[in-house]
Length: 346
Ligand code: SAH
Image (cartoon, rainbow, N blue to C red):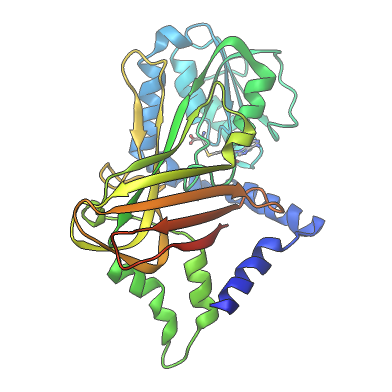
C-alpha cells in the first residue's frame, strides 16, 4: 500500500519538461488528425443525431446567423448549421483534419463564403468577424471534463459570443452512482496478482489508479444517481471546472459496491423542443462509455443503506489535459470505514 501511495504521489508531482509538454499537445491534436477517431464519433448516432436535431429542427435560431463551429473536425456540424440557414459558418480546428474538412465542405457544395474552415488553435486564430451569434461545439471528453476542451469553448465565448448569443449545447451535468462489478474488477485488477505465475503489483497499482473507461451494463447499478456538477455554459468559469462535491447515494439492493461509475448528459436548452442526450448506463450506449472508479475495499450494500461520498476533480497541475480525481467514501451502514483514493486520468 505504501508503495502504491508513493507511486501515485510521484506521478502527480511529475513536472513535464517543455519538450514533453509539446509532445503531449502534439499527441492530442495528432489523435484528431486521423479519420479513425472522427469515424467513431460520427457513427455515434446518439451524439451526432442529437447535434443534427438541435440545429436542423431549429432553423428559426440559425437563419442568417454567424456561427462558430469550435473544433470542427470533418466539418459535420458546420454543414448542419449552413443547411439550417446560417449566413456564415466558421469552422476552426487545430488538427490536420481541418485540411480534409476544407475538401469536404467544398465537395458538398458549400462555398468559402458560407463555410470557412480555419486551421489553427482557437486560442490563436484570427476570425474574419468580431462577434458570432452562435457557438456550436462538441467538446465533451470521457468523464465530461477529460481533455479540458471546455476551457477553449469558454475562451471563445468570452472573446467572440455576442451578448444575446447562444451556445450549443449550453448545459452539462456529471453524475455518479454505485455499481457491482466483481467479475470485471477481478479481470482488470486482480489479474496482475498472478500473470502466468508471476506478480505484477506495480501494474496492479496503476490499474487501480486509472479510472476505467468501459461500458457498464445498467443491471450493475445498485444505487440511485447523484449529480456532482452542473454547468451553465453561459455563466460558468474555467475555475468552476476544478471542483469538490459531496454526495449521498442510497443503495437499492443487497450486493457489494465495487466502485462508482460516472457519466454525463448535455442539453441544448434554446431548442424548440427539449433536446439533449445522456451517456448513462441506462441510456443508449455512446462512444464515451462510462468511467469507473474502483474502491480499494468493496462496500456491503443493503436496500436503503447510504454511502456518503466526496469527489474532488482538479486539472493536473503540470499537464492540464489530465485530471486528478480524489474520491472518499464512507458507509456507516456497512463493514467499510472511510476510504480515500486518488486517481489519475490521462
Ligand atoms: N465537431 C466535430 C469534431 C469534434 S472532436 C464533430 O462533431 O464530429 C473535437 C475537435 O476539436 C477535434 O477535432 C480537435 O482537434 C478540436 N480541438 C480541440 N481543442 C481545440 C483547440 N483549442 N483549437 C482548435 N481545435 C481544437
